[in-house]
Length: 96
Image (cartoon, rainbow, N blue to C red; front, side, top):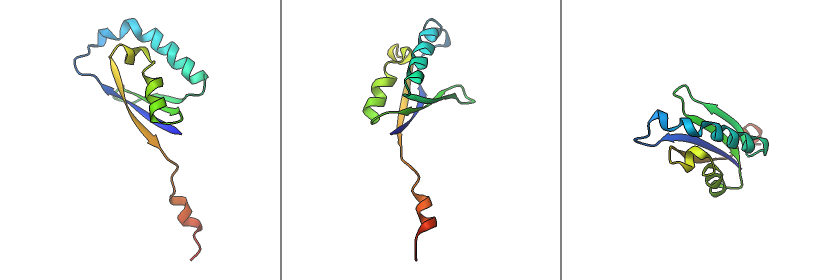
């Protein structure tokens, strides 16, 4: 199942709190990318992360996202959205 994970702000976190954890965050993201769990990883123009994950369900996605150092440290959190295939193309092939 494809999962969209959108980073959300944690109130009260200062930019300098991220610095000691950024290399570990990059390493963990690389591990997840290499294992095929993170399929795509982006930053928005507003500088928040957007990930496409391949997981069994939202619970597995949450567990994986919680393994990211910035999440473990309480510096970021994610909104998790399950994605389904678009069914609208079926209308192109309906027989009337």
